[in-house]
Amino acid sequence: MISSLLDSSRPWLALLIILPGALLLIKRFLNFKKPALVYSDIRSIPSINSFRTNTLFIPKILFFIAWCLLVIALIGPREGHEESNITTQGIAISMVMDISGSMKEIDMPTHDGKVISRYEMIQNVFTDFVRGNKESDLSGRSNDMISLTVFGKYVDDLCPLTLDHSFLLDMMNNTIEGVKADMANFENLQRQSNNNTRIQQMIQKKNPIWLGTAVFEGVALGADIVRQVDDKLKNAKTKESSNYTIKSKIMIVLTDGEDNSSEIGAEEAIAVAKELGVKIYSIAVHGKPVKRDVLGFFMGGTGKEYDDAPLQKMAEETGGKFYKASDPDSLIKIYRDINKLEKSEISKQVTMEFSPTHRPWILAGLIFLMCGVILNSTYYRILP
Image 1 (cartoon, one colour):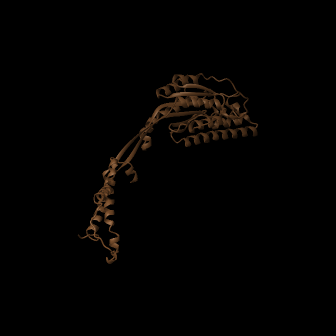
Image 2 (tube, rainbow, N blue to C red; image 1 turned 45 degrees about the vertical axis):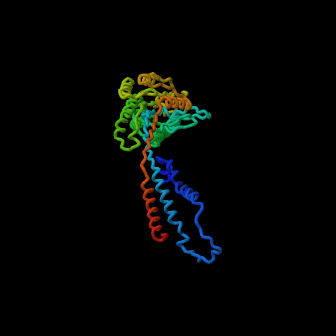
Image 3 (cartoon, one colour; image 1 turned 60 degrees about the horizontal axis):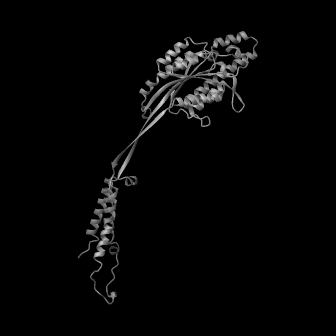
């Protein structure tokens, strides 16, 4: 109710509240000389002191309160209802990530002198890209729907397009840790057994995802996942998501090697992305070549120079950009660049509607007025 008084349609009429006091002053000024009888001694007049005589002012107070309430109703108190219509234009981001065995290579030097694995680097930097990190100058992608597709020897769509980024990052971390644990088990078997042929047969039979690199199939599946965003938005039922629109569709492909497992070629992957309107940002992760351990033999042997031409072609033909990353800092710079190129937008339109709240004031004023009239005509009645 107080907020209604602060917002009224005719606030200047509040000056009417002082009108009774002004009239009373004028009346007293005009009638400053009153007829009176002169007594030499007023002790002869009996003293009249009762509750009625002591409270003769009550009807006047009731009349004044009634007047104030009616004036408040007259100034037009109203209550404002603010309605905000927030429209978010997000980016549909398909993250296509290499989790092949070569990603366990520890050849990524950090600024503090440590050397971490490629797995650890992509986990840390991608988390900062999604959630934001002031130190890395990454604002985060809170308004963007992001999916996660991983590939090695085959492709797995871990997470569909979602705004639940905590779930997305948990899926990424759990998957990478699972792959690392699986490779560690085979490393232990390799050390404990002298039969390398048997170990290789076991690996081939299990067909783990980390045993190859299917870049092109990962790109095709990642593009298809982004295509589904329009259907997801149409089926959205909540008010928040009903105003959500997609500004653009992009894919970030991150790999440290060449394709050796896809059943399709680069041209087919590019055609799928172009048909679905997906822009590709491809990142080639190549650290300093080091000698691999015995398990690395199964993933392709010692370090070498990679042919990044297919990654560069995918980016150029879809309107994206190709990058090379050799350490965490360079990968952060790449994500920072993508962060600037692909910006989300939020627009907020605020409308204010007013509803009158004068009726309670009128009702209260009439009640006080009736009480004053009744008391003034009965208990406080003054005879001539």
